[in-house]
Amino acid sequence: MELSIEQLEAIAKRVVNEPWGCGDSHLAANPESWAPYLRFLHAVVKVYKPEAAVECGVYMGTATSHMASANRSTLVVGIDRQYHPAVAEVTKPYVNIVLLTGDTLYSYYNVEDALVGRKIGLLFLDSTHDGITPRREFEIYQRLFADECIVACDDLLGPRHLMEKMQEFWNWLPGEKVELHYLHPRIGNIDEPGFGVSIVKR
Image (tube, rainbow, N blue to C red; front, side):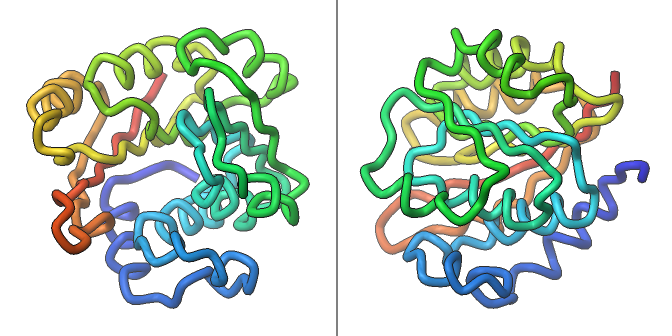
């Protein structure tokens, strides 16, 4: 299925008001599942069925689980230096998840081994939001991309002191892009995190 920005925008608008957990009771019980971008990632995997999705910056594993639950034949590889203590319980039901411990910038060969020849159809950048790290992550893992790959980027707007650097990264990022900030809205006094996606073709 050929990727299109218009279809991604349609998916984003559709999932905003859908219930937590995408019909999965385990996901729905997770307090982080309120965020619409999680339902978006789930829907993208469900619609496009990529061979593999890679997530840079896992922490609790909520996004990882949303992607994995959408299509059991999609391998979801997550990388993080330090996981939340609950990550094992959060990701336990989904056998198509592989979690790697290490720095996202130095895990290329571990990721390549975990993929076992699969190509990345979805790359989710959610580790260090300093503009430099997501750029390097993209440059490193694009060698493993499918012919078309969706690159999803969290925290493009916040925290505010890093917004300029993240916007520089976003402007640099190749592909056809769209900002979907309403998928990660502001919570209380926290800066609006923001969210965007790009379609990158080889």
